Length: 414
Image 1 (cartoon, helix red, strand yellow):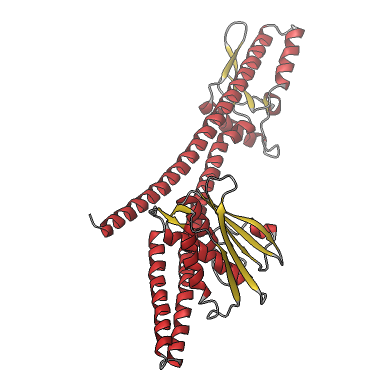
Image 2: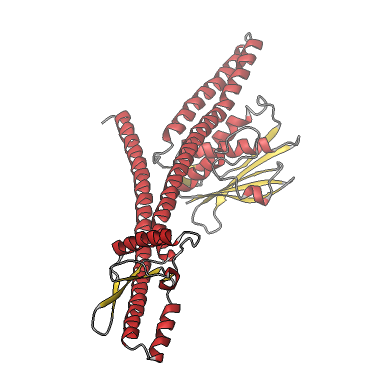
């Protein structure tokens, strides 16, 4: 299989994995919402059922006491319990005759019934008759009998206002949860789209940022060629530098091609890689309008497993940030390397005497999209940290920084 086919296959696998992750997240969100709905329905139904059962037991007790009162009209204790049960009823109850007709005077044979007293007696009777029919459709009435067992009255009842409200609550809660799910889904999709858009725009900005140095340098070399085209030695030197810029453009293209894939690490002398980057920038800083010197204290014997192209990208970003942070005429960037204090790896230190940062700014500089510059998209240091930590298993930190003094970065490699 060719390298192009392998790359295309790995890209399709990454896209498939990303789509699966999004699909799984959407399913999880939906299942969570459905679970909340089910829990709300079950919990509310349980409460409603308990309240309904309590109300039925209360009205059943009251009906039983009324029936006993008809059979023992002179029992004062029984009448006391009837009054006690009456006061504990907080839901609509109507006492009708054996033919389900309301008993006059109506106010004395009903409880908790909200009837318009401004209606005429006939209108009240019609209204109560209709209400009794509704109650009968909802619950079977209790029959009150005399000592001979004949039905004297029938007691109709319905649920209290709180039970009726609770019965509608699940639907209101479902609408709220559904609205929450919809809003969450829309917000999540919007955030994802914005992130993807920002990443693409950021990558485009980073690409322009990376291409800026060699392109600006090549424009400067072209101007030198025009001015010194008769000096063969100078033309030869300029051509070599232009060739280096062309090679660098190719390196930048390869770097972006490696984003998202696991790079191949090689055991190389890190000092030589850093020197290559520094020498490239050293000859181009004057062309970029910067008077900055790069001081190196390198050790050619120290090796580490790195991806040369990606590690160079990190050093370049740190140098560029340092150059942009230096506003003084005697700007200095110091790069040194040594064994880690614990002796289990390599430490590269990049220090500049630029304007430095506050602690608050330093705590955010590795976040994607964060930048204090008027231009740029804040992806450079975020990419640097990902390259060092995710691809090399190392660590990139701001070791020291102080406004007006400078900044020190540490790159720790295993």
